[in-house]
Image (tube, rainbow, N blue to C red; front, side, top):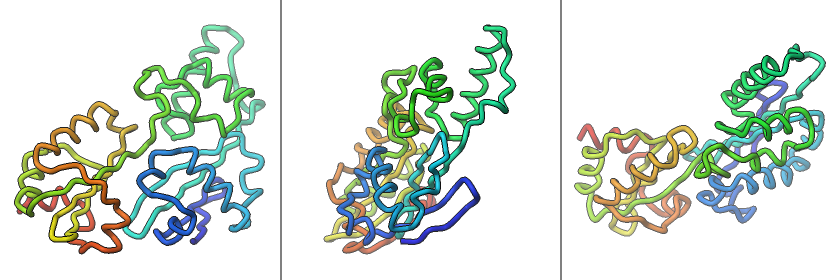
Length: 241
């Protein structure tokens, strides 16, 4: 496990698959459970001697970035200074200024997209802690408590089925890998459903199931016991075959 200071507000914690296993963490579940991400950070903060790093931050945000060796956990803290905010006294102008502020914070990743205006205002101006950020209601019910990443594994009878899928599915994915394990071919798919939207992610998954089948073999098992055939951009590479 390694700690890297990106800037005064942001740190990167590099963790290998062994680090995750030592803590009983399943990567596929970890990517879809924000509470587990926060719990892990606070558990290891004393080990990394950063317990006081974000103690004065009003908002602390977390982002998990999977890689071939494990994950990078990005942690960013930000302090909201109300005295520096030039907010108008007129109610309509105040509402517009507040909407612009919340939109800017959402674009920076500090707040979920499409947050409820009143709930977000409560958080920014007191009453909601940074640990409650994932409980802010979304305008769209389907995006409530939506994890940023979703991950699944497909199994193919042979390499031709994998190539056929790649050439017939033109949608992009966040990342894809191809492995051979126990004489079968497996592709891991990582999608950013907050960026693409859950409906599109589910649609792409359904299309892929016409060529392969869902498999419970985890990425950790494939990386440790399988034979890596294409470690990055597997779909794009297979499309060129």
